[in-house]
Length: 111
Length: 113
Image 1 (cartoon, rainbow over the protein chains, first blue to last red):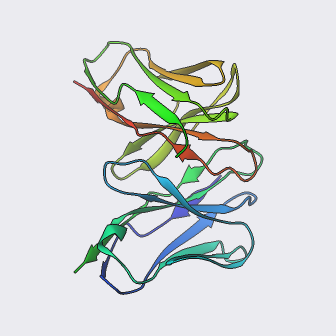
Image 2: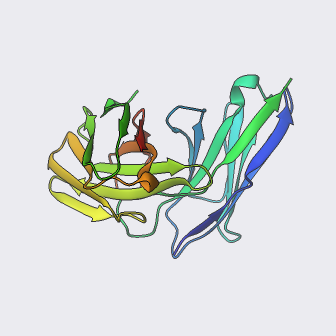
């Protein structure tokens, strides 16, 4: 089966850097996704990692270590609009296009 | 933005009544999904479809059924709604099986009294 763990809540200051961690256990590996979800809205895709290492996309970066079952999302130069829930998700191996989501990390950015 | 709509966007119903939620896409994507989202549980997969008339259960499928008679529409039915099915329901679509970035609809807020 699959198990995904993320911290429930985090708080950070505008302009700072924050790292949101995700650990997972899967019976096979087919990549890891990060989604952003603002309150009352639908989740939107942020990043996809399938190989070890850091993927940078503007202010957001995502890191993966397959051997450790670990990923993190790094947000730089935090802005108030980054206050949202960040969801880590993995596709179960050989189960079509399904995704299993973690509970999400609620990030609050303070002035 | 991917063309996904959900209807209705809000619904209040009573325990024991049947409810159908509709997801419509204009992207011609093969895969469609229904999730529910509840505080403390995150997004949980109810049912998904990998083609017309091809569907399978997710992790919380009890009390729900689905149908997909054409590529663009995926219906979720609560045969007899219960208060535990009060939730926000999201539909999602994806094109590929491997790299399967999913695009989400705007959601339906369902309240069962």
